[in-house]
Image 1: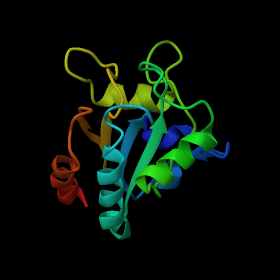
Image 2: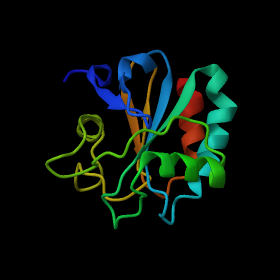
Image 3: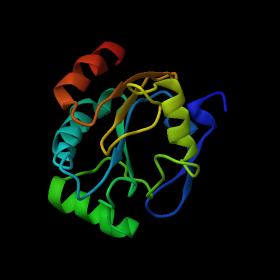
Length: 158
């Protein structure tokens, strides 16, 4: 795999989508979990999405149950929970694996491009990756990173 655009993902409705469909957009890819202490970040991420989406920015949420089983079982439950409780309108995809031998190809690619501190693997929910319009993974953010921190970098590449 030579590019993020070679990867396919599955949306919450079960449709396969090429990441190439997002080519030309700045992306923030986030591994989410509905029952995590960091879940309120969805509010700030939604605000960031609304503020910059007309400039070609989008947030993509990928739920995972890899960390203390903090995610609902069905995609419909996940999407509804995010919409009702946090006003999320950015795309939420089907649950994926973030680590181990069954890691989703998207997250295998992202972690190979931006390894974390001491290890490549994702250590917790709400790890975030910022991707340029050309598909370059330019930054990895810790779960505790705020939208304000991300916005500073986002403004530089929009």
